Each structure stands twice: as C-alpha cells, then as structure tokens.
Amino acid sequence: MIHQTYPRREIRPVEIFNQGTLDLATAHLLSWQQGPGTFGGLYLHACWGISGVLQNRYQGPTTFPIRAIMGGFMKLFDQTGEIRWRTLADDCVSELLYLQAPEGGFRHADAQYEPAYSCRQTCPIHQGLPMLALLEYAVWPSADPRRVKLIRPALDAHWEWFERTWWKQGNSWLQPLPFAGFCGVTNQDLVIVAALARYATVYGDSSRYEKFGRSTLEVYLSPRYHHEKLGMFERGDEANFVERTTYNEVIVPMLEIIQQTMPDPRLPAVIDNVCAHLFDAIQPGPDGQMHLAWGASTDPVDKSAVTGWIARPHGVYSYPLMLQIMGSYLKRKPDAARQAQFDALEQTAASYVLADGSLPVSIGATDALFTTSPYVLILWAYLIDRLGSKVKSPAEVKLPTIHRTCGNVTWKSDARHWALCRDGRREFAGLRAQSCGIVIGPEETLAGANFAGLDDVEINEVIGVD
Figure 1 (spheres, rainbow, N blue to C red):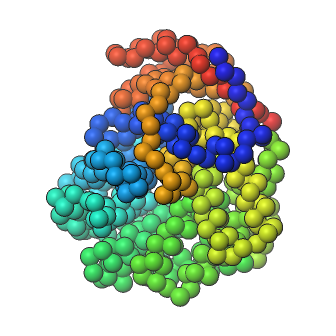
Figure 2: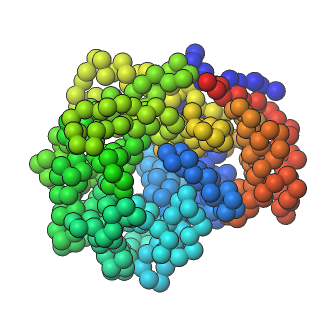
C-alpha cells in the first residue's frame, strides 16, 4: 500500500502537469461515462457548499460540463487524429440535442440541484453553456455535417423558449428586473450574451445580440454591476455581494468570447483590469501555501477598495482554469511581482493533484466531504491545453483503489465504485455507470455493485487539516 499526504509541498508543477497525469485524468473522466455522450458525476458545489445530489441519489448527466468535455475531445482529435475522440465529441452533441425538451429548453440543466427532468427547473448559465457548445461544434472543421444541420433549428427553438421564459425574469432578490438582463446575476447573464454574440458570427444574424445581448452587456459594464476600482462585478442576487473569486472562471472567458465575436472597445481594458485584480485575491492559506480567497467583503456604498477577504473555502478544483486566465494576462502584461504570485498558486495546485488524476473540490470547507471528494474535469481540460501540440492520445490506465481521508470523512473509490464514509460509517456509495446508482447508509445494496471491493486499498491518501 502507498501512503500519500497532501499537500505535497515538494512536488514541482512540471512533475505533475504532464502526460501521465492526463492519462489518469482521462481514465477518471471516462469512468463516469454512462452512455454515448452521457457523462455523470457528483455535482458538489464548492462555492456554496451544496451536496444535495447525494440525498437525491442523482449522479447522471447535467448540461454544464458537456461543453468542456466535448471541447477536450475535439482538441484531442485535432492533435492526435485518433477517431475515438472525434466519435466522443459527436456523441456529446447528440446528447445535448437529446436533452432538448419539446418546449425548447434543455432538461437536466440544474447542476447541484439535479435531477431536473424538465427545462422549467434551471437557470441561464446551464442553458447558455450548451448553446455555446453547439455553436462551437457547428464551426469545428471535423464536425459531422448531419449533426451540424440539426444545430441551428435547435438553437432557434431554444431561443423562442428562453426569451419568453427568462428575459427580465430576475432572481429571488430582484424580480422582475427593471433593466435589461435575464436572471440579473453577472456570470449567468454574461454566458447568454456570449452565446448570442457567437450565434451572430456563426450564422451571420446579429439581431438577437443587438436586441438583447448588447443592452444586457451595457448593464453589466455600468457602475450598477461593474466596480472598476475593485476589478470586480456585483453578483446581483443579494445586496453588497460581489461575485466570488472563482466565478471569474466564467466571467473572464465570456467577456473574451464577446470581444472576439462582437468587439466592444471597452472590453479589453475591463478584462485586463479584472485579471490584474485577481492577484489581490491570492492569500496565505492554513496549509502554509498560497490560495485564492473565496471572496471579498466590500462597503455598501464605497466601491473603491476591498474592506476584507473571506478566505475559505478555497475552490482548488478551479485553480487550473484560474491559472490559465491569469497566465494569459501575464503574457499580455508581464509583471515580476505578479509572476511570483502566479508561480506560488501554480505550486499549490500541483501539490493537491490526487492519485486518481483529480483535485479536491475545495480546501477548508466546513464539511470535509468537499475536501475528500474529487473533481477532474477542469484539471483534465487544463492538461490538454497545457500540453498543446505535445499532447499524445491518452493511454488506457487502470484507476487505483483509493482511500482519501480528511478529518472524520473518507472517500473510497476504484474504477467503478465510490463511497463516502463519516466516522467509519458509510453514508453514501455509488456505481458510476448508473445515473441514479447511489445508495444511502451502510445497509443498502445495488445490483451489479461490489462495494466490498473498495476495502482492497492500494493508495491511502490523507489531506491535512488546520
């Protein structure tokens, strides 16, 4: 048995962000495949500490990861020419088209609140990300023409439903919106603006962007939402509450898509300003390493300075994407001090890469289940991008049987099963191949599952606590 303690402070990023880890991460991702283009997972929300999918017994598909999964397959095919990656990308498009409800919206589009068997249980970001995925596939040179022909009619039907359902709908704090927008939350509405902008360039029709997207962007670039001196955006569903740090993994890429497709002379400076202020959020963590703070506290009136940083939980799962965003900024605007901060954050991310090619959902969460549970998708996509032209078609490797402990919580997993235990008692367990294949408590059984095999541990991992 191998014993491993985290963080591994001695590890260097180059030793971990490599092809071998990509091979492991790919095996981890594919272990959740439940059908052609259908990938499940545990949708544990690191930022808000939501784990309701466990009680709901749901680990099936949801729309938000499909764009990243499909994008990774597309890049692997472009780099390696191996047909299985193109087939997997094609299957992801078919899955999205299958998830479109008769009304026009997508089913299973509610992430941490799944299962969502209709398009009425949803929010704009989980409708907008699949729109972007379909648009990106539509212009992929290796796309299947038969599937491409289905995309525009699907998007047009979707928009008829989305406009009717979400235009100025608002949120529980502000409803309806007294200004242009959809749900009134920055990261969510910017996804829709980006999708409308991309639709305009893909199909040569900017009417929806001009009518809905541009006016919505104006709201989010106004002082109501955009705090220039902070380099932050108000979130919009609560008073005096700026977007949490890791939500910039959505905000910055969406602003970049808008600028690439429907340029606005203000956006380059806004993007650079947001990226520059991300370095302000890098703070020492309880493990002695540098982390991104969970969020900033601000004055209700004066938005010229952060009044304090809320450190935890640290959304470690998102660090690879945040590193991409911050690294891209440093290429545009080199700065020695910020480069040192970047290097320290990169070191932190590398030190938490786990033996199954994943990262913890978060560090410093109130419930240690978020620390022991793995998240693989962002690291997997990051490794493909980082390796670039050097990437090889991931080798087929066997996932080890792992016990991972933080405090009184232990995660157990192999290539087919997982279990979460607290104080030695099994609370939840699952068979990855089944979308509702979760048992609750120590006594329940599941046909086809062999949870006893999880006790044949090969790697014992311990994540330190403060």
